[in-house]
Image 1 (tube, helix red, strand yellow):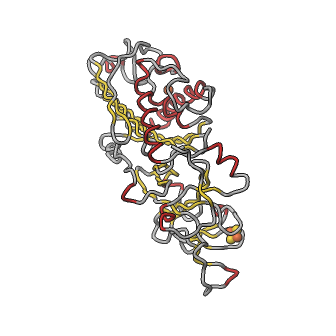
Image 2 (tube, rainbow, N blue to C red):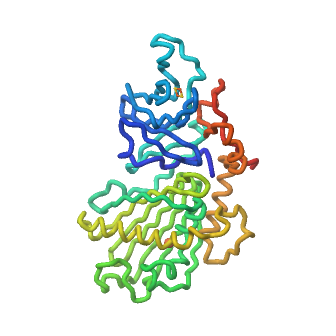
Image 3 (spheres, rainbow, N blue to C red):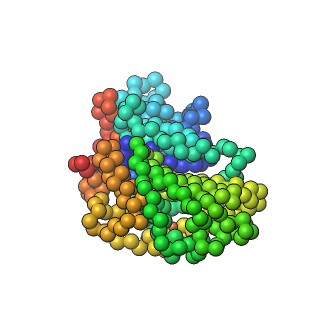
Length: 370
Ligand code: FES
Ligand SMILES: [Fe+2]
């Protein structure tokens, strides 16, 4: 798992004036809104006796620990210790890690790492469709997978399974056209143009007349970002029936992944079609789960020799290379050591304030020696 990266922590609508708990990269976090309505993301482990802050309550724009009532403010610093009284001097070490947060696309993103702002990788802007309600109808989906994030990410980049795994792909030709993969600062992109419809006399979208799905020319753009763990698939059809499938993946831990999906369509835009559209998307994901829940080994290998790559696997291979390269630059958690240490120590992801020195109660997760 990669630190110093942006991850979706929650839907914006999840976080209000009660503490919201979430687990990312094997660590627990609490999210809440302060008095100004800004989202705050803190390590969930109280520095006093290790209670879970998210099991407490919010008061005065702070989160109050449920055990002895210490109140943590927007920077993670304790601002009130009830047992010392209101005028007491609060020790500097009475603090927990606080992570930079950004709200975008109705989602809350947290930067999980200690890089100073000037060095942080920027979340790529890959979704101009968001908010363009005249052109697109959007639906939102969230799903937890019992699968390693790398396995799921590679599955989303993989087009050669569509004809076999998916009911919507039954008409697709198994033979793949090969398109060059372009490397970007954040990941890889693969623009594809099909001079003919990529399907064999099929319908791509349900409920669209077959004649409308005869496409002399279509384009598909696949963008896979390590930064933000985003995968976007833009399908522009000559018929005019277009869709954009956008996904962000957040590792819950090393074997579970939270998946945030936004789907845009420019057809059947009436909201009454939303439910069936979401069912179709969820059905497709379930078809993937039937296969990828059972891959061996469960963790994506971090090499290219333990599995066989062939030419049509270009996007997955390019993505794996990029994820390894950026992971080594940004920092990767040593999960095995972390599991051993976690029995006796509360381990947290380092936050930017650690760069300023001073001492902290909690140790940070061990990193691989990359
Ligand atoms: S454990 Fe949090 S205030 Fe005591
Ligand atoms: Fe799939």
